[in-house]
Structures are given as C-alpha cells and as structure tokens.
Length: 595
Ligand SMILES: *[C@@H]1O[C@H](CO)[C@@H](O)[C@H](O)[C@H]1NC(C)=O
Ligand SMILES: *[C@@H]1O[C@H](CO)[C@@H](O)[C@H](O)[C@H]1NC(C)=O
Ligand SMILES: *[C@@H]1O[C@H](CO)[C@@H](O)[C@H](O)[C@H]1NC(C)=O
Ligand SMILES: *[C@@H]1O[C@H](CO)[C@@H](O)[C@H](O)[C@H]1NC(C)=O
Image 1 (cartoon, rainbow, N blue to C red):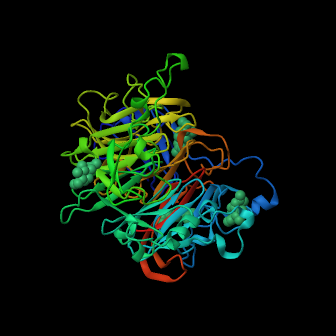
Image 2 (tube, helix red, strand yellow; image 1 turned 180 degrees about the vertical axis):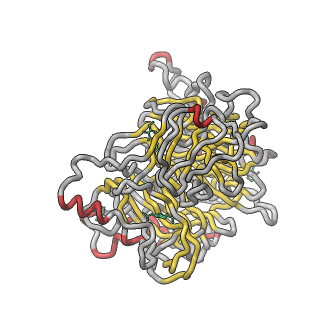
Image 3 (cartoon, rainbow, N blue to C red; image 1 turned 120 degrees about the horizontal axis):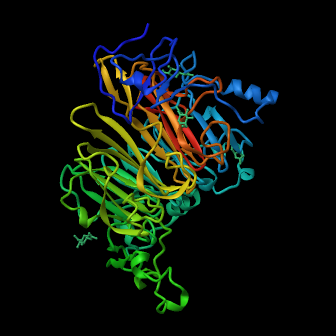
C-alpha cells in the first residue's frame, strides 16, 4: 500500500528523502538506484532517511546505562506524558542544567534533567517568547507582560530561596511586548508598537532604579520622563526620530551590543556596555551618550581592539608603549546602569541597503538583504562570520558579504532565507535552485565547532567556511497536495548563548505526508544533558530527539482548551498554539507559543 510517484522525478544527488506516511513498509530501498528509478516507495510510521547508500530507520532511544533504578523507571514513565493530555492540559518540557533554577524554578533539588521532563509551572501556559541566559531567564506571557526569574535575577543561591520566591516575577506590564533578548546584565523587550525597552537582569538593580529619586533637573534622565513610568526600566529610542509609520520590528542581542531592524529595512545598533565594539560588532565607532553630570551629551569612541592595538598578539618587547583601553571620555561612565546609553544608532555603512533580518552572535553581527544576500562583521576568531578559509582575521570591522555558494555548481542559485547566531556559532539557511529540478534547502554552519556545533560530523574549533550540516540539509519529502517532491525547511533554529553551544532545530514536516508536526534535531555540547538524549557526550551530527518509548519527539500545533497567563488566570479559550524549542545555557525548553 505505498504510493508510487506518477512520474519520474530527478532527485538531486545531495538530497535525502524524508517521509512519514501511515503504513509500515515491508521492504526498504537499499541504494541510490531505487531513489533514482521512476518509482519509489514512501515509508512507515517512523521516519526513514534515504542516503546515497543507506537507510536510517528509527531505533528506540538508547539511554544512559545508569538510568536503571526503579526510581528512574518511574521517572521515565512520568516523563512520557503527551504534549497535550487527555483532559486538554498543555504540557511543556525542559531538559539539561537547572543550576540557576532557570528551567525548573519549582522542583526542589533537581540540578539537571537528563531527558525531556514536563514542568508544572508551564502547564496550560502559552507564551509569546521565552529566553534563557546563564543565571537568569525571562518570558512574555500571552497578555504581553514580561516575567523574570532565576538565581541570577533574584540574587540568591538556591538555599536562600524560600516559599514562592522562585516564581517568575512580573517586571514589565501593559506594554504589549512581543520579543525578548537577554544579556548577562540586561533584558531587552520589543513591543508590538515598535518600542524597545531595557530592564536590568537583576531584581536588586531594578529595585534601586525604582527607588532612586531623580535628584533635580540636573539629573539628565529625569527629563526623559522615565520616572513617571515606574522606573525599573528605560526606553531606548532611535537617535534620529523615525519617520511616521517606521518602527522597530525585531531585535537581536549579543553579549554587549544590540541590533534592531525597522519596518523600512534599516538597521540600528546599540552599545549595551563599553565592550560593545571590542571586535567591531557595533558597526559604528563614535556616538553620543547622555552626560551624568550636565545636560550636554558626551561624545565617546569605541575602537575595536584589533584596530586599537594591532600588536596585542605580538611579544611584549616588540610592542609600542601601552595603548589606553578606552577613550578618556568613558572613564567616568558607569555602563552597568541601564541608562548609560539611551539610543539606537543607524549603522552608517548599511544605509540604503534593504535589510529584512538581523542576527547577533555573542560578539558578531549579521544582516540579510531582501534578496537573500548576507553581510557579517565582528569577532571572527572561530570563523563565525563565515568568510571562508582565506579570511583568518580575528575581527571583521566592516559589514562584509558572506558567500554561501562556494560549494555548489555555478548554475545553482543560492538565496539565504534565514540567519541564526548565538555564542560563537552561526547558522545560515540557504535555498538552492538549479532552474531545472526542484529546490532544496541547506543548513550551513560556521564558528566554534569544538563541541560539534557545526553538525558536519567533525569536532573542530574553527570553521571559517560555512559547512553543510548533516541530516538537516537537502531533505525532500513527497507532498500529497502538489503530488511532487518538495524541500523540507527548518521551521525554527535556536542556538545556545553559552560558549559551549548546542543547537536545537525544528524541521517543518508539518505539511508533509505525515502532516503530524515538527521533528526536533539537536547537536553540539551535551555536558549538562542539554541534548535530551540521556547521555552527556557531545554530538557532531544533528540527531532527532526521541521520547523514552522510542517515538519521535514531535513539536505539535493544537487548539488549546484554555490558555493561562503567568499569574494563573485564564487568558483565552480555544486558542491556536504551537510548540517552540529554545536552546538555553546548558539546557533546552519546549514551550507552547500563542501563534
Ligand atoms: C504530539 O502532537 C502530535 C501532533 O499533534 C501528535 O501527532 C503526537 O502523537 C503527539 N505526541 C505525543 C507523545 O504526545
Ligand atoms: C533546580 O530545580 C529546583 C527548582 O525548581 C531548585 O529548587 C533546584 O535547587 C534547582 N537547582 C539546583 C542546582 O538543584
Ligand atoms: C545622532 O543624531 C545627531 C543629531 O541628529 C547626529 O548629529 C548624530 O550624527 C547622530 N549620531 C549617530 C551616531 O548617528
Ligand atoms: C543523523 O546522522 C547520524 C550519524 O550519521 C545518524 O546516526 C542518525 O540516525 C541520523 N538521523 C537522525 C534522524 O538523527
């Protein structure tokens, strides 16, 4: 009972067929010859990948041999809960490190979860966004309010946390927030109307901000009206006011800089700290900040280290006399306080180029043009800008084009359809078309592959040339609707902000033959069980996540019986929701998002 293709389809050499129909197949094609024949069979309740000479069928998950005690068995059953329970309860899952109480602020004394485990605090909750950092975390509930939690936020070790103090705390309300970005010291929140807000990542810093009395008119920021609004946050605005109808539509934060995109395709940048331009990632060197003491702004210059001290790597003897680390005007500036710089500045070299996506790695920046080209700049010591093996500069201080078609024949057109950056890793999703046959999609990665983050089966500390990640590139499936083969496109990719990064990718098999949902593939560092496979060894190849019973871990869409806000109040009933996966700092979360 399997389907034969009605006509011959040319399958590109590099493609793999990915299929999920309902009936188990009695036989399997065992070589490329079958695929290239005029008919081919589609498979089974489990996924089958057909490689050039191999068929990878599912095997049950293999767990760490230490998971054998009765208690662990019970745990295994417990974590086999479905994505939506029979009574309609929405379940969310976490795995990996809970060191800072970020993924499971509720259960006492669980420092890590080896396998995807349901958490009560997210039951029946659907969010707009969720982000995890090393010591703190934040999310936006269905109403658009921001909550923060984690030891780094509350400022207490687990032993000091009593009663309900762990609970996510509402820190920004009534602003209709749609997107969050976290850094060590800040939370950035973008509102539906295009305003960018910043909050400290520490509760204590928020308290002291709220309490601080704006002394007199000599205090510059009392003039900005921040105080009337509650004071635990600030708004950052465009340096030159945006034309009517232009607004910020997306933000992306590195460790010390923030990129923001406007609805007209302009790119702005914001220094989060004085380190914002250490590798030229800011895309701009001089800007004004408010003066702490008087009303006239102070001009500051952030010079990339590579330009400031080209001899930094040389032996001390051959170095000229020491170069001062920062410009004199910065000495008395405290960049720990969120209002030290209150502006977003347009990146001068990108003026006039239509951009539709921005992405920041830890110290790197990327933009995608509306026609699918990519420019990158910033730190490149692991090759994370992706400029190829001939470019070994540690810092790229000007936006530079990333070539994503070196590995394909000349007649193949390449178009970038998405950039994801995080830590020292970058992922480009690239559509390939060769005119005659079908489109395919490649996932290209570069940067620090020491923990396998490149996904090309190699552990390599620097990857300068974007490499094709295995198992997620060149996948095709048979579409019932079009009666033809079509590419499988990643629906969402999340890269851990941690230096030892891992990547979580959801494959959009939603529209495929199974129509069942999205497969989750993970790879990279696994020291804290962040890959959810019950083991601690890193994976250099994207690998599908399975449930304890061996079935695929599928991200679902559902119509929720009810969705609650984080206060526990019912927000709406009968809402469309979908599961999203996020890579945190040594951990991962699958939550429900209001779609
Ligand atoms: C999760 O949801 C999908 C799609 O709704 C469904 O096919 C799948 O069986 C569910 N899996 C589990 C284990 O709940
Ligand atoms: C992780 O989980 C719980 C809270 O949910 C917490 O009480 C526990 O102490 C956490 N962290 C560690 C290191 O165990
Ligand atoms: C900020 O705006 C001022 C006033 O319009 C302008 O002179 C200055 O060049 C701008 N700064 C940057 C870095 O764009
Ligand atoms: C991905 O690649 C690895 C190694 O080649 C393989 O073992 C695995 O089964 C592949 N497929 C999936 C879906 O993980």
